[in-house]
Amino acid sequence: MIRIAIVGTGWIGGIHADRLKRCAGAELAYVFDIRKEAAQAFAAQHGGVVADTVEEACAKADAVIIASSTGSHEAVALACVEAGKPFLVEKPVAQDQAAAIRVRDAALAARIPSMVGFNRRFHPGYSEIRSAIADGRIGNVESLRFTVKTATPPTAEFLKTSGGLFGEFGIHFFDLACWLTDDVPVEVFAMGSILTDESYRAVGQIDTAAAIVRMSRGALFQLDIGWRSTYGHDERLEVFGSKGVFRAGGDVITMPLSGVRTPEEAARRLPDWFERFEATYLIELDGFVSLVNGGSAIGASLQDGLVAQVMADAAARSVATNRPVAFDVATRGHEAGDTA
Ligand SMILES: NC(=O)c1ccc[n+]([C@@H]2O[C@H](COP(=O)([O-])OP(=O)(O)OC[C@H]3O[C@@H](n4cnc5c(N)ncnc54)[C@H](O)[C@@H]3O)[C@@H](O)[C@H]2O)c1
Image 1 (cartoon, protein in one colour):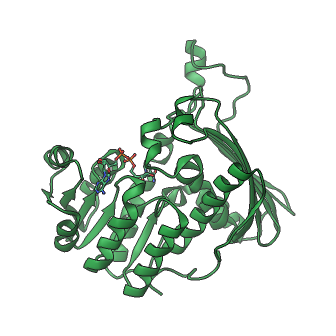
Image 2 (spheres, helix red, strand yellow):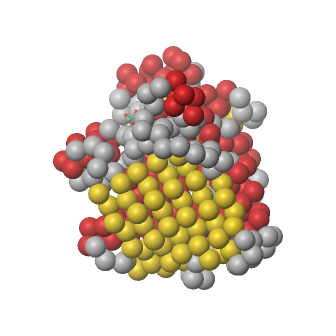
């Protein structure tokens, strides 16, 4: 039985703890949070022993799930490397690309198995699109268009220690664009606005953005993203290829929704993001346990996480400078898994 430590006992830590109860071959053994009372409440609810330090949690556990705030990922991941323990780090790998490089290089040098929590890769819809592209069913990919609007925006407080709109939310789609097309990005141009929540301004955050990324084989990937949807979680993808188009999202809204006010509108409301992606976390966890047991890596590697982070950082820089940004970090390399 693999004894897991969960570091970070907030929202996603609870999701992983719930999944661990249903995961054969692993159990929650230790928990750590900088807020000790939160860790104690978490242990009372989910089990596990509260560790006094992150080092203690890493030393005692067989493997670690890093579910703490984004700004702490680097330090916790390096503690795992120091202790020689495999880890699953929630996305994004770290707060910026320089930190993500340090994490990747340390884990590679110490040959520590690791995985990044890009859970959307485990959704059957996205897997199907990846297969359709790989099989050549839609021909050469010429463009991809993601529309993603969330009904559950973060608070300005959360965003203070986060990667922002691109680093927290957009990063899922930066990763998917690369994974679905088996390609790497070369350049991005993005614009952003503050339209949904004025409190974001004080913490230097945007809430609405559009980004265009040129991939290395020429395909253009467009991302229309925002922290507001009044009609439920909207997540749609169209992939245009030389032989046809693939559309995903499934939730066709034929009338404009001005917010869910009437029962008719409520009935048409799109499901929340968690409802759509809930099943992916258990598949991800099973993959991680298999990796800890010596199985081959599935899901996103630290290199994949770094590439998505490079895209997110560059998109934010493009918004700030109002210019296209070419990537200053190689996006190829270490593609076959971080311990290779
Ligand atoms: N894959 C997904 O679908 C998904 C969804 C939500 C969040 N996330 C990611 O998970 C992480 C946490 O998000 P959340 O929504 O659970 O946030 P949260 O604010 O609910 O929880 C974060 C927890 O981390 C703790 N923490 C902060 N610094 C710490 C440190 N140095 N050591 C130990 N604990 C520390 C905080 O006290 C808090 O309890 C973020 O990186 C976020 O991007 C991923």
